[in-house]
Image 1 (cartoon, rainbow, N blue to C red):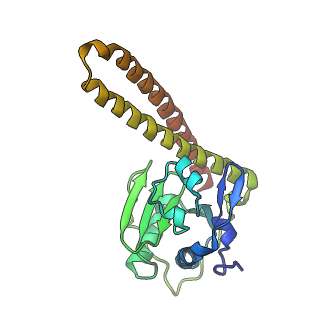
Image 2 (image 1 turned 180 degrees about the vertical axis):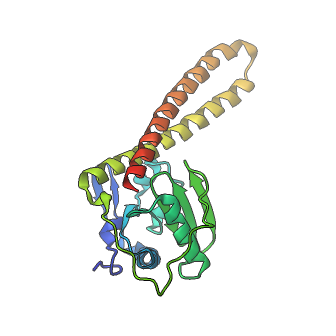
Image 3 (image 1 turned 90 degrees about the vertical axis):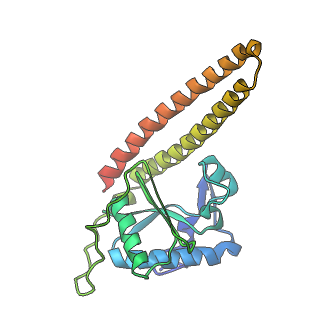
Length: 237
């Protein structure tokens, strides 16, 4: 029994960044409670355990992983999660169906390579990253008269497997932040280059070339990491 719902405890949503754990501030608990209540509906519907990969984030944590300054994670109002035995796409569709059925509050829903995002913001927002948009046409909510599903063993319960996945996820977030920063820096340098006198272009062109090379390197690392994440997610599905 958790301190939020029967299956969710506030400690599951704590911000964990660079070895430091920060619990959700008490003033944000109303947001956290609403989030947990909606996730509990999903948990009861699928009959499988849900692992919170990322809940509340401190400002430093959010900035490091490339989150926006308006991220719902900053208010303890969002969760990135996995469902035992279900792919992120299937998890996305289950939440989408619950929203359409009026059982879960409308909000933000995103499908990623290794997790699903949900936040009960009250207005619809949908996105995918690293995968194609889930096709929910063949997914349906369980029949109320059907026996409850047998919960499969959760591979994420393995502390080693869970630690590896969490490291890969945090690494992917950090790399995306680097890519966004370098892309912006390259664009800014290009803009300055367009406004320079011809005699000054050479030195600045070298800076742009260096930035582009660094960007390509980071993108290569990110692509390799994404493949590892996809393989890990497939193994855990």
